[in-house]
Length: 603
Image (cartoon, rainbow, N blue to C red; front, side, top):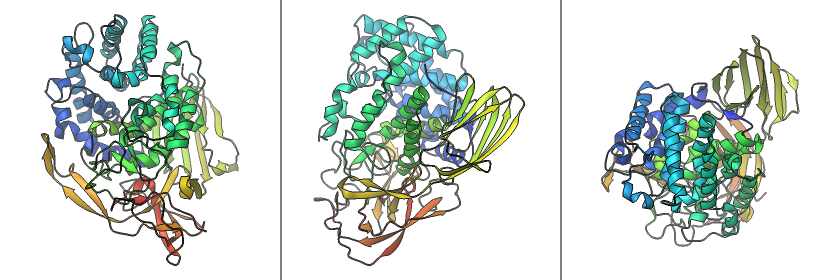
């Protein structure tokens, strides 16, 4: 039902800077969460007494592909240990969640939707022959309980019904049984219809609602793509309608929608939850696979190269719950939070600032992104995201050598086993495309490769930095898929403590980031000069960024937001210059933990 199919961890391996990023993740919180966090190491999913709902499945959803992409035997064995423990506790009727039988009607079955998706991920990585039948039994039990009305969708399960379709699609490919269509229709009828909520997204409220909850919404962007084969509806790109409404009224420079924790408008000092970043990426990955429409791939790049690294520390041991476009400090608010429905420490870097869902869920971002680099159909392989990767599939061996997005040259080394068509997606912002020494204006390259052929394709293009207009007559600097910010120097204050039985100690303690440089600037002309630097062992380093842009600014009167001492005002009080021209160095947004991203242009 998809135009493109995803490869597995047995076929794709990360190389270059992307492999470095995955290794940092494995050595950080993601790779150690089962050792330090009780909701994973003592979870009810494996027979413990801690949380038995979404946190173990969330963690496994990223930990499993990370382990297999890196071919890390210890991590693979630890993943299997969790899967074995979960399968051991599956009831004879198929129910698998840690819940007493007489309490199933009050158990939010979002956990069923999530664990079935995770088991599919595990099967695609491990080829564990037990998994298809396990998933079949879970879904069959779910179907029988819903059909008999012994349970029904409510709360999170009601608003995330479409997540079940990862497992439904998988199970139908394996078993081809018609009851899956009936299950799909029940989920569709009981699940929330996001098309009804569009008017609610135009004006933010200081109120928590399921239908304006940012994570629910970005998950829902893919609902039509994953479910269309099992409903009576035709695909009409409802995702684009939802996207436009969200971006027009809640969009940020890095392609996110503000949601701290519900939709929060266009202000650069509102936040976006980290869970939303990785779930929005996952939606775009599946939307591109279904449609082949390049807009989803470009939007995916924007998130992956900016929003994802910006909100996680360089060593990936700590993260924020909320990131802000203009984030001049990450310090606890002594009074009312600036966020609409999140607490006063949601923007700190820590183990579980605000809530622990992001602690478990953020680690799916990089592994699934790596697995989206190449896709295929019956006779075609396409390079979707041109990051350094190696593909070993039934058709060919393909290696892509590149430092994209920090540089824009690419070498493809191809050794064919079979005849196939090889395609390369060219970003819409690419200028002066040169392929094997010849200029080109194509938006997609295509080659017919014959069995036994060895081929090398060398490609390069230019990207031009520019100012993009933002709301409130502010501007942001972009260059290709990278957004640039004025970085703010900062001092870190570390907090080690225990709360609710959860220990926070170095390196997974909490940190405040206290500003130590000026931020009250406006761009004073449109001159932008790009400089490429060496990529360090930390690709999105906040100290040694791989690319920078030189810009000119002047000081202006930009006060604090009324009632706050650590949040800049939404807009400056005056745009009149208060100094002469100064030269500043802009960092990629993903390298800037404190930053000004939306500023006036007073040329």
